[in-house]
Length: 220
Image 1 (spheres, rainbow, N blue to C red):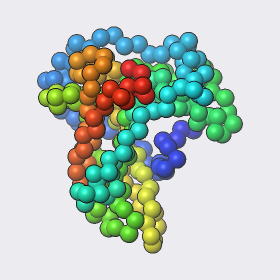
Image 2: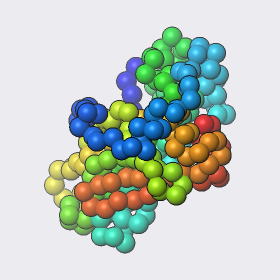
Image 3: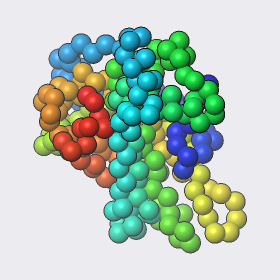
Image 4: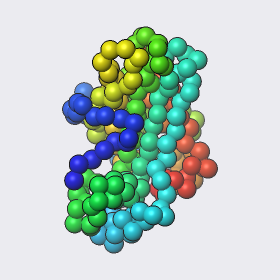
């Protein structure tokens, strides 16, 4: 079944960024050593997530309008999935093309105990130059005090098209990054603790705070 990253994005390029190219900080290593066991979704949990297609929580989506004021475009957009909301998302996508997702259709990678962050670039506003934009270079998770950071376990880059008034469509790179849920819990100091998702780009950096009011959409 083909995957989509959202109706506003058109994927035209995909490649994997080797994890070995990223230096791992001491707080990251400590979090990895200390992370509690987090298991993939079993068949029962996958079935429940599929059944939640009509009533389950939608993924958390946050939009940074700050780019408009920084001269870096329209702002980053992030969509955050837990394993449950990711499977429900896949079921909804299947339904839009008239297919019913089954438990057997859900691959191990889609059941993995990860926090999945889809970070879309800050495209230039209509009529503005390409210079007023920011592609995504890196995605990090930080604790509430922003003293420790967690690098992604896996990163994939995609090219997202954006509209222009004249000429052909242009593209900017975004990232899909996954973080082990156990390491995220250790980093933020346990369940119920707020944290940040940091987007570093070619134009500017933005910290999105994940607040307690967002937790209904993030069943961590």
